Length: 354
Image (cartoon, rainbow, N blue to C red):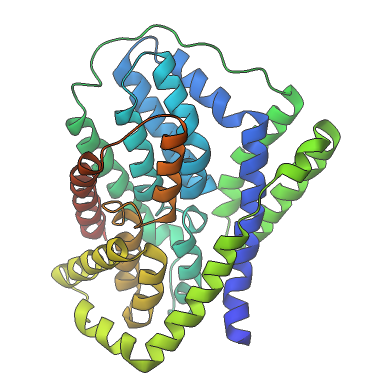
């Protein structure tokens, strides 16, 4: 139990702190202003606007996590697309794809990455997380953008009229929130345990919020259900692993470190994540990785792969809910076949980049 608490304590602390940062950043209008400035910077080009949204979704995912992109950026992107009279489905799908496939670069980008830090630290003479994952992370992002651009090439042609300006926001809260979000990226790659800069950022924003918009303090919603689910999954997978699950998973994923063995591992990880969910898939496969390259291949599979089914990652479920609230319907068949192409391209490209 002590080992369990030692491992998941920083993860839960980070999750709660970053949720506070994201909620206050949304209240401050960081995502709203960024998306509308992207629309103006596109100067009427649909393709240029899409590429700017790609950059925004990628940056949001890397620094503030995939769930933040799914929950907070999706409605803003849909609003901008509608104001520009552009069919919103291409922009909606691009956002959810990048929320998953762009979540490899930093430990904070995905909950699985934070869990992986424990294993990285137990590998003798291990390099840093970023130095190991930057190549597969870049490959996954590029593959996603290329395939998504080809799939929606017709939608991305043409021009649009200027969108409405962003809604008015408290300027002090907006500026402080934007500066804090930008400062987090270098802090997250500095080698400091991510929970500390996340907690410091949350504290700064809470103080500013208390001065500028005290009423919103009571409206911040912390993900207690997610926290409970993480604890339950840890206990359940640990119990199942000691009763045969680990051996079965080892047989399924193999044990080699060559190219085909790594593709087998990342592909199997992606498949299991789509069948169930990426978090339990990671926890089940982690004990049989055995090397740094295999652990990286596991992360590729459970981060970039679980986008074919709606339940493959929590971020996708959150994204679907935001689309429904915005009145945007993405047909399940369309989502599945297009996401399958993206998943295969991203997982294969990222694994080969290892």
